[in-house]
Image 1 (cartoon, rainbow, N blue to C red):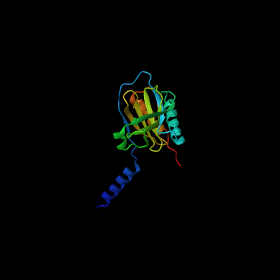
Image 2 (cartoon, one colour; image 1 turned 90 degrees about the horizontal axis):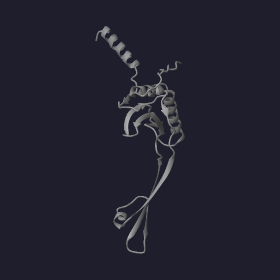
Image 3 (tube, rainbow, N blue to C red; image 1 turned 45 degrees about the vertical axis):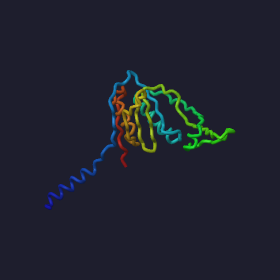
Image 4 (cartoon, helix red, strand yellow; image 1 turned 135 degrees about the horizontal axis):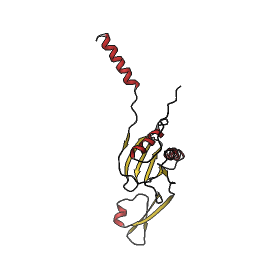
Length: 180
């Protein structure tokens, strides 16, 4: 290979390797309410998940969007009884008791937590481990945006995503990366 072609190839490789590809942001365009509201819900209630949700909440508030408080959690306990045929099929976490007859009765108790009523147009789900933010339209449960959140540009990306969705926001200011 001639030296000129080799030098051109090396220059091209250096140029391409120096450029970074941004994390993708996916946005679905839909009609929006006149004054949309958001609620930010962490993946779970571990402290680091709530802190990440609070960070995203602050970004959305600083963009000028309306944010409502997270709804409270409530514990739901349901109990049901199963007949002989269902009990023999195997039920996790059930107690089988003899009711004084030959028929067995299984009692299944299910416990879980759920949010009280959500009074917002959009739900923002945050996942600290994956550094992901998802914007969901509450009424349709449609995911409208999925954003990869990074420490430097994450807030800017959330802001620009809201703007591209048609949410009325303040102008975004792109952060400058720290130089060493």
